[in-house]
Image 1 (spheres, rainbow over the protein chains, first blue to last red):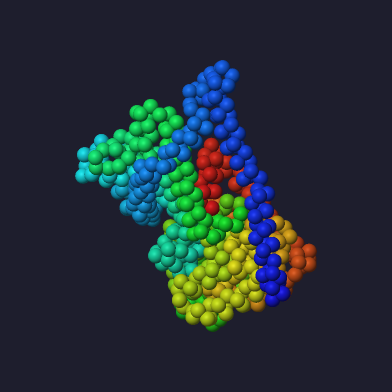
Image 2 (image 1 turned 135 degrees about the horizontal axis):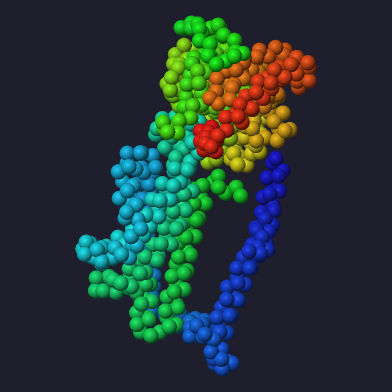
Length: 285
Length: 304
């Protein structure tokens, strides 16, 4: 036993190297990189084909080539306003998202475990759920004192319904045998909730969070396009795209779009990572 | 303890014999169970499906009673009633003379499919009950659990999650989880279903060794007649749905048992007797087929 530990210590350098090798050998990673490079090449060729070959490719031909986008981007990153847009959008997304989590998870769990609560609150919830978050914008602007708050509210709504539906669905599909087994071993209602229902719902909570996060990004950008950029509140990435469009810079619009793609990817990776950490039993496969 | 005389004989049980045995015996922490005229049905009036009718049965302390019946006859409903997850529509279920009103730690169920929770390791699953109730000191819990893991041969696997264990290991972990609670009555609902033939045989032998050591009262529900004969002291044969007791067969194979006994003429005789009844009952199930049968079948699987 001690020998094994000793040799493991000696070869830790080798272990690290093989880990790097593993990453380098990872076919999925290389396929992903190759796909992105191919996509960019395809885009470049199509966009430039009028200049290079004298033929305009429909649709894609009208979009500025990636080389132009990169040049544009390199210039934009020097403006603090661009980074401020990032910050503003991120702040709004996380603000609305966190409140949706804090309110949505307990609400969903309460719907799942209590029949009376469900009877009373589920019907109004189901009536409100199909209303698109953007339809709330006018009402929200009238209702909340500041533009920032109305954007936050619309963002919150975007994530809230998804989170609640996922939590409710997850909690309701927990195998009744887990509950019965715990019950026959003397678990109280609170034990059942804490030891069975809550951990059993965790995967659905994270699914809801990941989907909700995506919707939050969609909503926040649309909300910024409508109400952002006023005197009270700053732009954000959504407004950045909108004003670039108004200013007629297509390359800048694409910079904004890709920025959002990256922001969304970072956000959902974060959620996946937290989920990975908090559900050790799901790391097995 | 109330000594209750079983005067009730199930009306429809043609071959059943009256069980005039008393069942209260707490001397060794083993309980007896008494069901008299239990009825249970499911569904609203328009879709009423009676599952158990006038079912009377006594389970004697320290004995292993196996219950067999045609598939879908209501065996699982019986388990749910005895465990206290559901209450009978009429009739009485007495454990040591006091009626069952809900689930309790004196009756533990080992389910058909594994009910180990996937988010706890095997060890956490096993100590779940005593840790919740705090009726054992932490040191005591650890000692008991370690002993049980030794018994079921899972010492190296106690920190694994259930999904990392094979089907047979899961069943053994589940046995350990049931045993640490020292139930007076262990209810096993087709516990070895879904295991391959080899692990099933091993589990039967393993379980038999455990039972013969402690002789805790055990109700063993199964659809495998040979398994029932191999394990049981008494074999209860149920009728087709709505279920009642058709026959109680005393299995007088000597203990400790081994698989060779299954090929004895005595065992063969038990098997023949039980199979005859089961066959008859299964045929009845086919005859009662009418336009509603699909619905009824769907309903019964839902409640099984």
